[in-house]
Length: 76
Image (cartoon, rainbow, N blue to C red; front, side, top):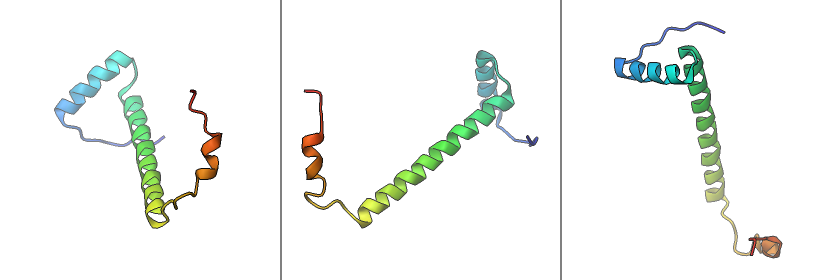
């Protein structure tokens, strides 16, 4: 691991300190986990955007998935 220096406004730091006290973890562990989760959210958002762009470029054609209609089980 590498040590870095961060600047946080006092209100945010106060909120973080309260959370880490309740979770019984270190500030570094909390920030590491928060950054990992945000990176995952950004990765998913990017994939969803690519998926959307793909469907906009090549929209589903009428009847394209009709063959699967009989295979669906809606629990009725």
